[in-house]
Image (cartoon, rainbow, N blue to C red; front, side):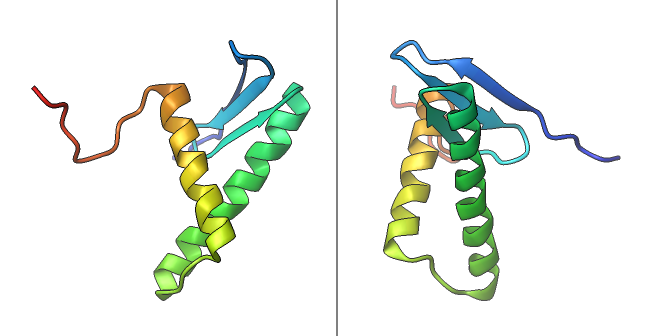
Length: 91
């Protein structure tokens, strides 16, 4: 079975647009227009793919790309309401 990529572009309440993909969890794009959000998502996916490839080889990303990846994942979690795996809500 082939999993199709679905890209969702939504208007952001705070202005502009954001784009996410079901195929690349953690990647998010933002921009003033839907096109800019999609282009930003493509860049985020490139960084995510590079990270995963380097991780396999035991290598690290540059600090700049690592920061972009971390910021991207944080934005993704905020926009989608996702929570980090293995973390439980405090009682």
